[in-house]
Length: 162
Image 1 (cartoon, rainbow, N blue to C red):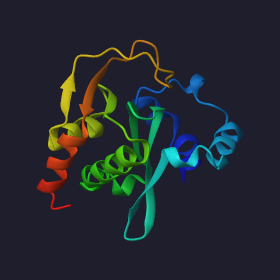
Image 2 (cartoon, one colour):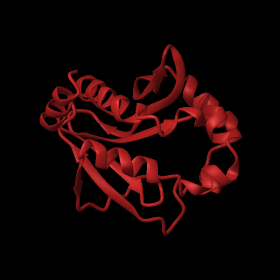
Image 3 (tube, rainbow, N blue to C red):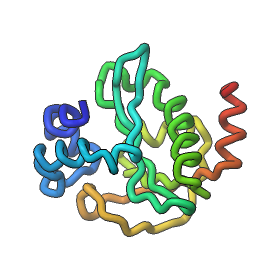
Image 4 (cartoon, rainbow, N blue to C red):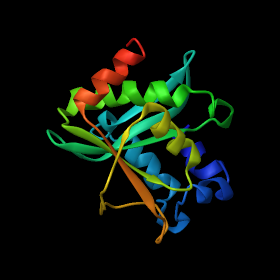
């Protein structure tokens, strides 16, 4: 599913997210990385009615401090249905508990409207930050940055009755 998203969704779609296709690893490199048991704890599958439809991941992840959150609903027919909002919160909860994180950071390209809508809907706090991490984004793509602490997450989970 992950490989289909990155390599068979079409270059126009992947490019519309701000991704520099030249920075995307080869499909074989991605396959090897995904099969690495040590890296699998950094990924979570998004499921809807027992169907895998996407992933959440954290990279980089500094256990005990912070991680940068990534989310992809891989199956287009499940985008814009509100699934991301709930899965964001549940994944953040799992990553915070697994890695004892003090905060989860989100760097979202301005043109990724779906991801921006989720941050607005969940009222995830925007912060003034310039983060230099390895990225698949094209040079010059501007991002907005957001932060979620364990305390803020608890309140949001309560709102959803989780």
